Amino acid sequence: MSVSGSCLCGEVNFEIDGDFESFYLCHCKYCQKDTGSAHASNLFSSVAKLVWQSGQEKIKTYELPSTRHIKSFCSNCGSALPSLQMNDKLLVVPAGSLNQDISIKANAHIFTSSRANWDCGLENIKSYEQLPQ
Image (tube, rainbow, N blue to C red; front, side):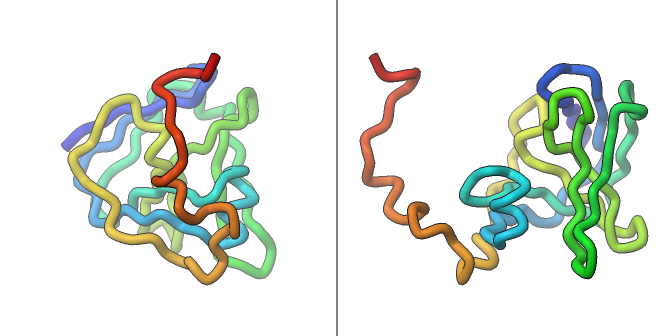
């Protein structure tokens, strides 16, 4: 499998060659903080290869001290970007950074003990296909 991705402003572009082994929705407090949302949606692979197509000089990586939490992002627009972790043995790809649909579905919600109290029963609230009038 080969998929492409980019940041919001389009400065950083990449390609992933290979398969993802897992897809987790992480509810830990760190992921809530760095996404500003209820959870991070990350794809994981120990075999896929990451190739930066453009904008590599715009990538910043933040490692939270005394943890294994790492976030790479575009220094221009702040979008989450892929990162190599665990001594470059694990590729972590924010699912929202991909430019096309993928066939893998989320395996599980993880760190649900930290789940935000407002992130429950969301499937039961009203939904709109666009901004409500």
